[in-house]
Length: 137
Image (cartoon, rainbow, N blue to C red; front, side):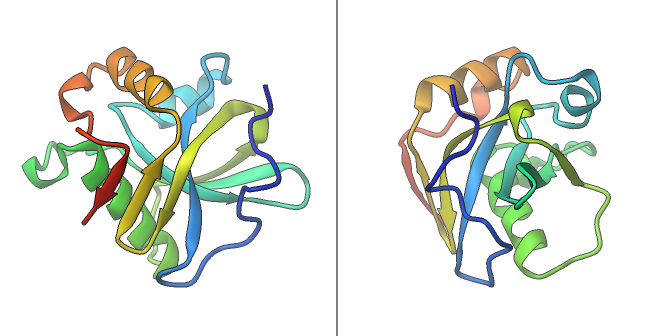
């Protein structure tokens, strides 16, 4: 399976622009799996060298407002488009993640709910699963 393809955005979007939504590949390297935990919300874009840049939120401090997966995803997107300083950013080989959808401004479209559900279940965050594949902030 291709981890990212022709429809993956290939540059950092500006506010309101389109970015990819990712989950870790089940065979991701340990360092990536360790960084992306707790049902992280992950957004990003592809790079010309076939790596991906990912901004993520894993709610390390258990903020109740960041419990839903989509809240974590919107937080990650905000960091990315606002160029906010963060330690919740990584660049890795594209094989470590699978694109499951898109985020654009205040909307998320999940194209593969099964992969999202599997990721959240493995992470112990199944209760953060969105009700719908189309999410509006």
